[in-house]
Image (cartoon, rainbow, N blue to C red; front, top):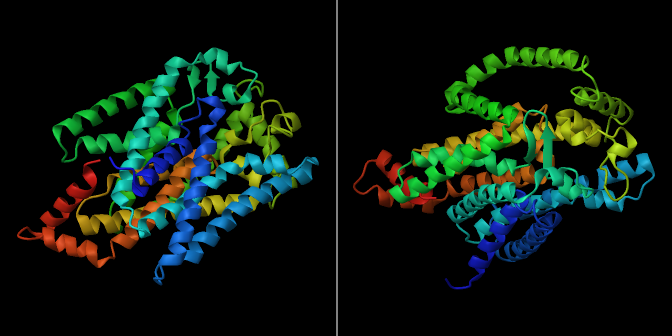
Length: 443
């Protein structure tokens, strides 16, 4: 293989996906994440300059991609750090550095710019899927390499944070959850697609690895959320005509959710705050803090200045409180942005999924897997604030870029010209299937 710019970019994207989905979490205190962020910045600067100088098409919207991203990252780095500094009289720099995971969102315009420069979307998808597979193999290797009990009681918070414990599941190495959930949807789909026997066998082996990981992590809430998301997709979003049923069900579902929340709070309030009632006590502290800082929240902590545990309670972790944790840290502004973004992401994935299926006759497995996981995280939004951590930010950035790429590609004359070429002498439905199998399913 020749060393070309395209090959170097491919390697860089693999490292970015692997690091962004926390494949380096188990090595050298996650220093690989810093390499991934550095590569994102380098590729962003490279593609921004090249596209700004060479692409003058009106549909490109260079300024929007660049300045909207800079505005978002600037806000998430500065405002939460400033609020924490104002509330604690601590220096602002450590809190800014603690928010550096948001730099991964430079991936979104970078991928779109690469596509507009001629980097094939199919290649991007294959690199992403390869990173997912590598991540789960990496997890299994480290699960058996690391002494989990020793790591859990380590004085180094980076090492201790790799392991979680509860009485019935014991010590568990935290998995690269986003990669794990995405592959749990993607791998079974690919097994049943029209692919070669050898490729089918490889995906069956990956499915076996996924089953093994599920027995290790026993992620009950996320597992149920994935099943609920798949059911919701087929009930409400598989076809446009089913949206009416979703609008009909939504008011009743909202009443059930509110009632469930009230019942859950009442039950949690009866538990011992030092054991099973940790979340209720932490939630009460977070809510009271939010009432004192309703607009922008309390702000972003840093382990190198002052932690939430030293301020509020030794078992207080806002990251474990779901949407309430977002209210605590980022205020009502942050919560509104988070909810709006979650809904926007799902809407965009559904629309792109429909458009792809209309043109090619089948769904794109990568888009479908992303859609299901996004739906699952939205269903579980009260418990899991996925898009404020680097794994969720990486997946969300990839999803926005991927939908933008496909929305552009589906409107191009070259795409339809290739379909027409494949149509001779086949029927149009056969053309769509042939083109899809050629371009997408052989991942």
